Length: 124
Image (cartoon, rainbow, N blue to C red; front, side, top):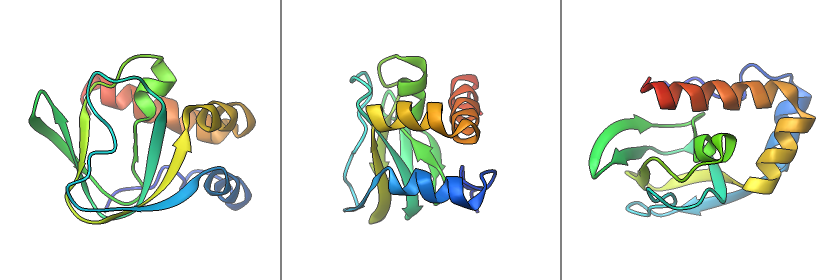
């Protein structure tokens, strides 16, 4: 089971993060993030599983508690991978603006995002 990015936050901060996003259901096969595109959104997976693919090759599978799309926002780069839903997904959708606001307003969330983004760049 994937550890949630929200686990290190105080309950009030976790609720604040969730309230800043919009809950969505995405179908299996949907690709909400495409490699080499601008960073305009990120998703917190609350149910389901995704495949992370670089150059068409799967490099990871992620599930509940994982955030996808954050690395390009945090690092101000183009997307480094494509994300494809392996199952129907329930996610919390964040715009890049809401991510930037949360990073400033909820320091623990900012630290968790930076750590996740650094881990993705390191290949972990």
